[in-house]
Image 1 (cartoon, rainbow, N blue to C red):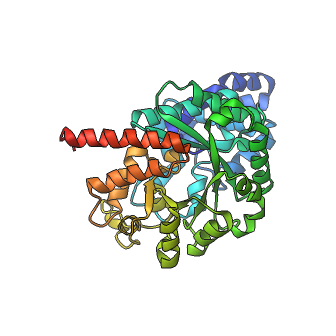
Image 2: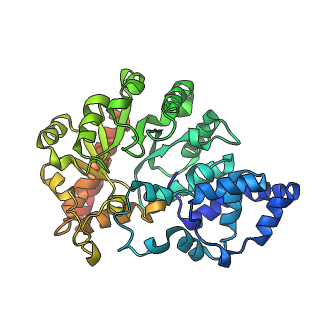
Image 3: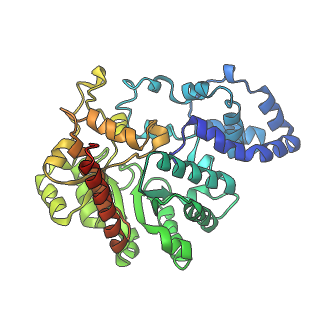
Length: 401
């Protein structure tokens, strides 16, 4: 949902050109609004994008996603203006820090659920993501998605089927997996619906081929892992993989609950784990993984970045401490479109946030941990890891590193 940069949002918005033209012919109010919209005169809505669309949708008697797509297409020849409109002062990396979770999530309000409302928009977005991964030499990717949020032209099963087909159609030898996102904020019925979707699709061949488990995501302040225990009992009974966002904006108790109430195999972010030595020992004993996201961690919290003098009063990023304690940490992109990052840049940012930087061997360890922590089927993962070890060994032998 947060994978697209401004150029790519416009590319996906083109999927709606035909529907926009049809709506203009049908709806004179919408046609007049489209004709009167001028990039130079438009400012970021003070009440936020969602409220702006909601009010326009009522006054123009049209669908919010068409308003969103039509607006994006106005910026086709001036993408820099769309960047400025969406990010404003956050285009300055020294100011795009410590903004907190809600303002960060709001930066994704022109994509995700309001943009992915048609079969072609969903398919195109998956293709864009896979092309990005291919350019960055990714060997294995776990695609996380919220099919319930993209219901519109398609129902949730059809949405998920489209995503699975695009994963399967991709000819790159990169291995692929899919995680369903269960969101803890908003209507909690969506968690039940996500689990039901798993049951509805479990006999579908592509679902069996790519599905690996669940990601409990969203604002930690909304619901604690303890409060969601009962909802995940079916997932736990079926021994499904689960990764949980915890310790991003809440203290280490949130991480403890994720481990002890929901049996998390991986923790998203885990920034406050350092405050509980006993829990660290449990992570070591159980080999629980930590998915750190340097760019979004810096942007949401306030960590020191050696490239940005204005950040020097921030906290010390705990990555090096975790590596020294031999915790299984890997590096992730979170929302690459929102964070204005990519796979390689996250490793660079990880080094920038680490006092003294990261050695080449630290980098190898982080990448290797990603393979170890993957939810890929066990026997296939062993083969994949052997390939990775041989590739690294060959690079060393050829003195290329």
